[in-house]
Length: 268
Image 1 (spheres, rainbow, N blue to C red):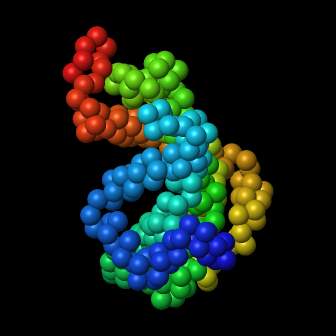
Image 2 (image 1 turned 90 degrees about the vertical axis):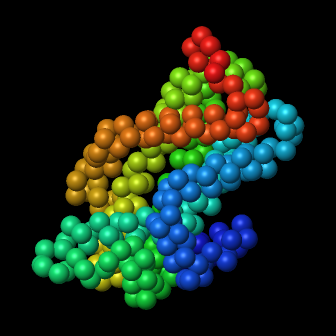
């Protein structure tokens, strides 16, 4: 919890730690646009941070690879303030659904807001941010890899496109898909640990921390447990992130230029 407080103070985001603010964020997240709104916030933060970390590059030029990596890293860390409670509630809901065997037991918690309020009431702010540190350790490097690999791959597939923005849709789809896969591969073991830590409650403490969870999981199930389900997990990010980056790039061109997009042989 001290790490969380220091993090929010450093970035001027301590206002997010109000319990009422946490519930409001969770409520708006589920009630309206789910992860679509999160993607919009992430890309906007990245656009700002990638410039802020390397001010030597003029605005007429694309951000440097250093700025891209650091911008993605900081974006992932900041997003964890919202994502950690959201994923905690999601995991608790999934566990409750799988454990509800008696008739009527499923009605105990009607939805995510009810679960969030229950956690805040029973465990306080520390409870709703259970797993925050491991979420930052997962998301910060993953977003650094995510944005850096996208920029690097698109430039390799279509040299000069970072400056002239003339890559075709296929390049966007492939670069975005591979970026999504790369970010998942690099953070997957931490995602396994995060899920196990957040599945704990005050009355069912199996792991004392990140290292302890790593050690006990490997001792009980071998190193393969850290990569279990990876094949299935990376198939979705390839499709989703290919579409996300393509939509992002096309939207930017429509807003800031004449809206022309290169296809294989033509411009649309």
